[in-house]
Image (tube, rainbow, N blue to C red; front, side, top):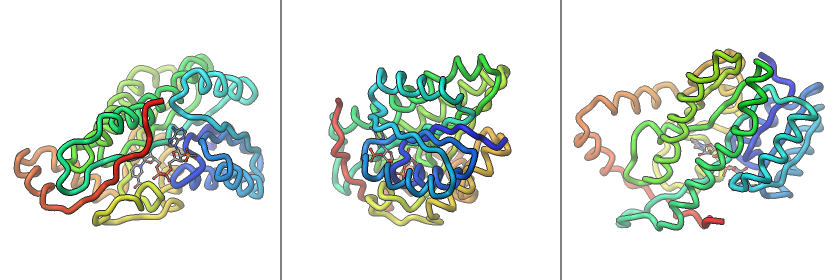
Length: 262
Ligand SMILES: NC(=O)c1ccc[n+]([C@@H]2O[C@H](COP(=O)([O-])OP(=O)(O)OC[C@H]3O[C@@H](n4cnc5c(N)ncnc54)[C@H](OP(=O)(O)O)[C@@H]3O)[C@@H](O)[C@H]2O)c1
């Protein structure tokens, strides 16, 4: 499927920005959501230079009413055939920390989970009504197993994985495809903030091309790099405390998010 009307959240940076530019061309309408006006305008200019028609939504994905209103209005103008719930933040622990700040935990749940729901909920019924379209969720390899460096980040991604699987089972019979994207390390500002070894790290453009190819093929799961994904899955069937011990040997420092509950 070659989508013509696409909604992407978190399009002002990283993977979202790369996705916008991978899809941008003549005849394609991009609806791009983020909070930073300047960075959104910059992506819009680059996408328009490639021939795309671009609408910008300077929105916080946690704002349910604003998201619903903007998304429904955009869908009424040009029905979406692809939505990518991508916006996300990270938070975690420094070596020696015991627990995450409860406010940071609630903030990441707001963005990474509630924000995803605010993105897709307004479109589920309209897409099912049309019997067409595709809903894509950006999860993470960190959502496949809890990691001791980022409890709440892993929890939000595991929740997104489970939600997308449930939705897929529920609505695909209506003609709407649901895809879960499970990236490993992708070089972006989010990823740059993490101090750790990052095996098989790829660029945003490389990730965006893999995502585009997987979505065009209607894949249920688009996971990359493949070897890291398989390793994470194997870790789920190994003895649990052994995996805990191996994880604890890595030195990882993930800064606490500055985001707070709105
Ligand atoms: N990079 C990786 O290695 C990696 C791996 C696995 C999964 N992921 C996931 O990929 C997604 C994109 O991450 P990225 O690495 O591309 O990070 P990034 O470069 O920091 O981009 C994050 C995007 O999310 C937007 N965003 C954050 N909070 C928002 C909010 N409250 N409302 C609206 N937009 C918001 C940001 O927009 P503003 O700054 O304009 O608010 C920005 O456009 C995230 O869900 C992340 O968890 C990333």
